[in-house]
Image 1: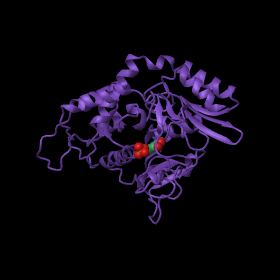
Image 2 (image 1 turned 135 degrees about the horizontal axis):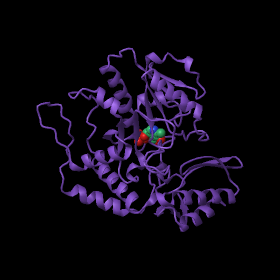
Image 3 (image 1 turned 180 degrees about the horizontal axis):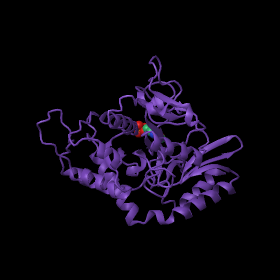
Length: 366
Ligand SMILES: Cc1ncc(COP(=O)(O)O)c(C=O)c1O
């Protein structure tokens, strides 16, 4: 079948989707696991129709409210679910406030802009620079393309690079940078590009040092690793740092509906005036299905005690990879970078992986 009407080249899909089962596809009547669970989103697999049902029911009788208006005289309103989710996140994170959007890229743009707004309010007008690291990915928009260097070959085409974004090596020396000019650093808990080498303790120590000494806001891009895949909803929870801002997306709704979030700490909240003008577009637009999906997913994580089997599932996954002759190059939570001969694959193990998942995985790895 010829598929017409799509952009040509690398991103053009060349196959129609296969049938699916709980954890992957069915090709010629043979089950296969989806190694990445749809780019690290569907942490509970593809059959949680209870999440879809919950969201559809929740959406039936509401008029979505976006709570942002260009006509400042209007009363601003927001649906109950948005308050429920931000309150829940506040409790779970130990005091981070949140705003919602639809894509991870938007959440990161919001995070960088919020760091700039923080310094603007503090009259730190010289703090304009944003630091990121070689070997990261932060999203598909202009600002994010200037921060991350992986997954895309040449996204700038004819556009000039953004002069206030600087990418450092992870072995950077503190003296290399004039930190008095830096507003924020953006970093993933663990970059999955390359071979997924975790950041060293020394690296995190340096970030903590400049965060504290030079009032540089630390933004953790938790979009790929967050949502439960480290045994905690927040992918950075086991790291030796405390972000000022963190961004999440993908798995935060178990993948079924799009949502992203930017969470920020009390220090930022205290700095922003109560009449603060947040010039970041209509961030609450269309986020209600995702918000309800995140609420249902959080309920499932709790009620089904999903994290109780987290360690056992990781042990089984490791055994499977090793028994099939793969080397585990690196792992971070339930993300595994494995290698046999020359082929390297990234696997994301579902949080509810069962005996059938592991049987199919064994077959796939043969
Ligand atoms: C670490 C990281 N940051 C940001 C993004 C961008 O998210 P989105 O594609 O939803 O804009 C991604 C997406 O793959 C990601 O993995």
